[in-house]
Image (cartoon, rainbow, N blue to C red):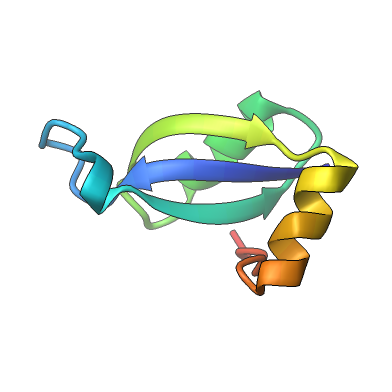
Length: 71
C-alpha cells in the first residue's frame, strides 16, 4: 500500500500549513511508515499519514506529484 505523509522539515517548530511538505512511502501499515521515516536520516515532524485508495493514487499519478521515497 502507498501512503502519503504530510510533514514539516523542522521538528522543533510549530507546524505551519505553508511549510507542510509531502512524501509517498510504500509500506504495509502506518506504523511501518513511521518506523521507516524514523530509521532514516530525516528528522521530520510528521503531521499526518494517509493511506491512498485507488482513486486518490490515480489522481496523484495524473498530477505528476507521485514519487515514491526510497527509505
